[in-house]
Image (cartoon, rainbow over all chains, first blue to last red; front, side):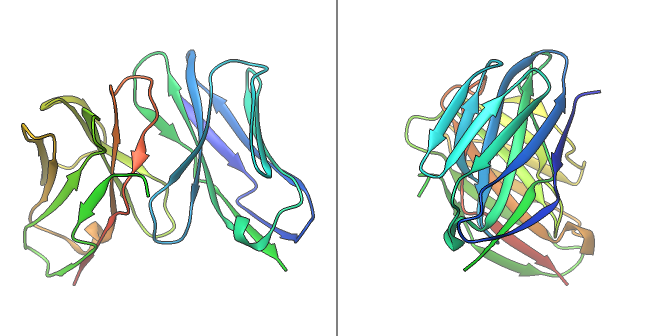
Length: 110
Length: 113
């Protein structure tokens, strides 16, 4: 069964304290892995798409990496405005639907 | 701003009632997706339309239905509402509806009393 697991469920950091969020997946062939950011009560905001192992993408303080079994979202020197829930989703080769993780709630304290 | 619009922003109704949620996709996008997100729950895929035709179905209840019109806007109809239907309902759109990125609207918050 295709599955996506995100860890940790929640992460509290001090401003400037770098860390990583994990997205582990088991799918029968990966078409793509997507990272989104969601603020409370708002729609998910697209961040990155990764398609193959070894691929990396960066945007400001965020960097996403992909291996054959997991993806990491690295956050460098975070600021309070980076506080949000970060969602990971994968698209399997068996169909085109996205399989979503439960998300990691990131809190950055000033 | 993703370019996807949803109306209304908030909807409060009673059990047993029927409501319609509306979504306008980004300009040029042919595919529309509907999702449900209950409090502290993950995103649940409901249904996808591509250029007016149903393309994929997820965990959509029989009490729920959707359609996509010739101008590509979409409506999600929820009937015989129950307390458990209270949730955020999101619409997303993408150009082709295959491997392309989905862009989400701001959502409609439905409260069933």
